[in-house]
Structures are given as C-alpha cells and as structure tokens.
Amino acid sequence: MKKTLMLVLGIALGISTIYSSAQADTIESLRGSNLLGNQSNEVLFKPVQRDRAPIARDYVQQPPLVPHDIEGYTINLNFNKCMSCHSWKNYIQAKATKISQTHFSDRQENVLANVSTRRYFCTQCHVPQADAKPLIENEFKPVESIR
Ligand code: HEC
Ligand code: HEC
Image (cartoon, rainbow, N blue to C red; front, top):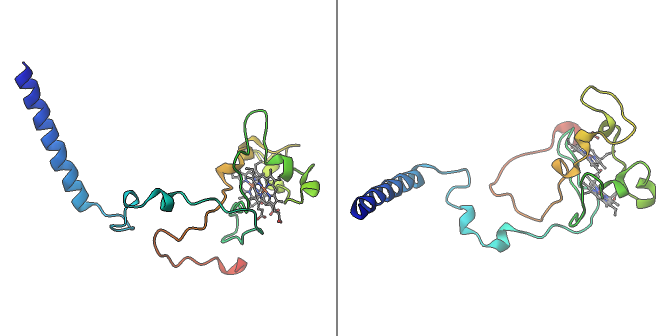
C-alpha cells in the first residue's frame, strides 16, 4: 500500500517537474529574462514619493495621479480621509483640488448632492507614485491635445 502511494506520488512529481520546466522554456514575457523574482525587495517596493506639485496628465480622462503620500488614509463605510481635503466643503481650507463635477453623477447620469458611490473609493482610480524606471522601455507619448 505504502509502496503504491510512493510510486504514484513519484510519478506525479516527475510529470509536474517536466511540465513546469517545459513551460519555463517556452514562455517569455516582454520583460524577457529580467524576471520579478530575480529582483531584490528594494527594487520591488520603492518608497512612495512625498508631497509634490500635481503631475501632468498623459491623456484626456486620465484620473490624475496622487502627488502626495496616502499612507494611513482610511476609506471605509463611515469615513473617507480624502474627502477631508478634496470635498467641495473642505478644499479651500486644505488648499487641495476639489473633486470634479463628474464625481457627483451616478450611472444614470443623475447629479447627486454628494460624491457618487461609484467614485467613493478614490484609490480605485487615483494612485500615488514611486520614482521607478519603466519595467520595459516604451515610446508612449501624451496625446497631442494635452502635450
Ligand atoms: C491633508 C489633505 C489631503 C488629503 C487627506 C488628501 N489630499 Fe490629495 N491633495 C492635497 C493637496 C494639498 C493636493 C495638491 C494640490 C495642488 O498642489 O495643486 C492634492 C492633490 C491630489 C491629486 C492631484 C490633483 C490634480 O489635479 O493633479 C489627487 C488625484 C489627489 N490629491 C488624490 C487624493 C486621494 C485619492 C486621497 C485619499 C487617499 C487624498 N488625495 C487625500 C491634499 C490632500
Ligand atoms: C472611477 C474612477 C474614479 C474614482 C473612484 C475617483 N476618481 Fe477622481 N477622477 C477620475 C477621473 C477620470 C478624473 C479626471 C476627469 C474628471 O475630472 O472626471 C478625476 C479627477 C479628479 C480630481 C481633479 C479634478 C480637477 O478639477 O482637475 C480630483 C481632485 C479627484 N479626481 C479626486 C478624487 C477623490 C478624492 C476621489 C474619492 C472620493 C475620487 N477622485 C474618486 C476618476 C475617479
């Protein structure tokens, strides 16, 4: 009984080894051989940039990038830290940009009195930045109209 089990396990292991090494040979991403796993945590987790001026947008309808640290900024059912500076009520005092009119419309285009639920979780669209080189070279340029 024990022997059969060992045999089955052995075969399964053998097959999976062959399978995974075959895969490693054939699949190559755009990043080539510079795989994430080969990089140290220092490279993988760069510190988020501190407060700075707003970052230029690259295309129309781009959610602007967050030009400041957001560590510890809670967004949950009862509280939205971002709104304590970016709401229409608070933005002047906080010297922050007010959320745009678009953030008040629901899916049916009804304009609401407060931020729409589909815009409530700000970090779904707005993300802070780290000073990191592109993982692969690219020739992306902002659209002509906003360059
Ligand atoms: C303590 C106040 C404060 C809080 C809290 C805050 N922000 Fe800001 N935010 C600012 C200020 C000030 C600016 C910069 C405005 C400027 O310099 O024009 C800014 C800029 C931004 C911008 C850039 C706007 C643009 O036009 O480029 C985005 C996006 C943004 N914040 C998103 C967020 C999000 C998302 C959160 C919550 C996770 C958040 N902020 C929380 C104060 C705050
Ligand atoms: C579903 C994606 C999405 C979510 C969620 C979202 N935003 Fe935006 N936001 C955008 C886009 C796209 C723009 C640029 C176009 C526009 O103004 O609608 C924008 C613009 C902004 C601007 C710049 C306004 C200006 O006048 O230039 C601020 C500030 C901002 N958002 C803050 C927030 C905050 C704070 C939250 C959370 C309460 C939030 N956003 C949630 C997509 C989103």
